[in-house]
Image 1 (tube, rainbow, N blue to C red):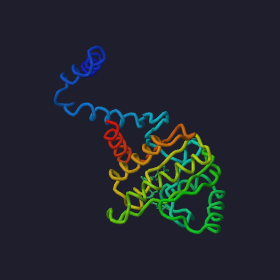
Image 2 (cartoon, rainbow, N blue to C red):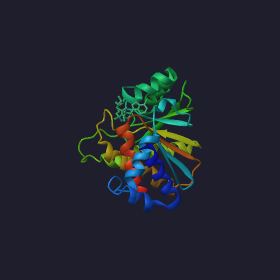
Image 3 (cartoon, helix red, strand yellow):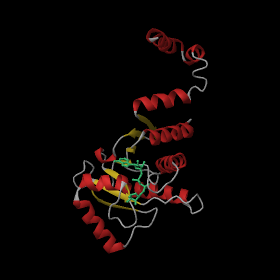
Image 4 (spheres, protein in one colour):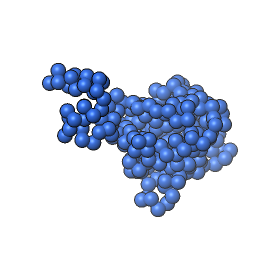
Length: 227
Ligand code: AR6
């Protein structure tokens, strides 16, 4: 078994895709997407380049990222909450909440689709960009538009502050109930179009996805988009 799978890889390396496809005709009938997704799942990370910017999907915990900023899927009150919001405030400490309070005192609650930036406190990331994704009501309340806006506004803020790298969680797909397959398409489309049209300092954008199902949804959406 071991030997035959090694032989198949050898055959692929020396003769190319067709030979491998043939020798595994049934198993790999959906080549290449099945193979690529399978490899992605095994590796827990996928990387591509868009307009000179490194775009990665990573299965992991965003609070451990050392990018210049990490993005928080917050709520309009900016006082913390569950999910990734709770994790970021716990890991970053009270300095983040202090700054959130000042922001709300000076400009009020954060509208859905907008973003603000605070210190990263004790996090490895120097900044936290707080954005609010839409609550899923079934597509009739501009959910896709608002979700795209949450990503775009975060990227604009990072660019305006000359940040080089930023990490996103999967906004709205937890407590806010946005179906993950649809959200992955909107998220990747928003980020990729932004990177394609803007000239910015950002060199690295990571999606840090907490569980296998979310990682798979984003990997599939990326493959669909980039072919
Ligand atoms: N790193 C990366 N992703 C995470 C982490 C982590 N440490 N923890 C959770 N996730 P959610 P939402 C994933 O509910 O749907 C809060 O209470 C999680 O598995 O955090 O935008 C806020 O205060 C899911 O895939 O955000 C708001 O009230 C994704 O992050 C509300 O939830 C988003 O899930 C926002 O809901």
